[in-house]
Image 1: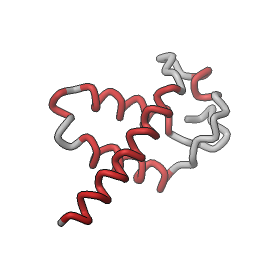
Image 2: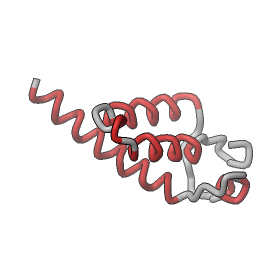
Image 3: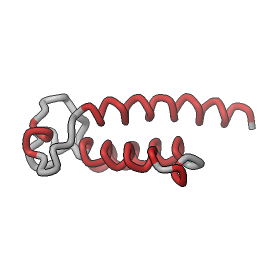
Length: 88
């Protein structure tokens, strides 16, 4: 996060979201969790602008591809949660 010019924590959050979405126990709350984690992260940190500095500085060599996966899941979650709210 310190290497990011926007002080974004997206790489860490994306890695955690991806990790939890792979676990069978994480599936029931997957869409609520990704939406809550991304909304909370963006409330406190900046947004990713794809500089890639975080990937270069990451001691665990986490790829920025995880950010794309997290964003895809986030948009799916927004769509699913909005659709679910309209049904109730």
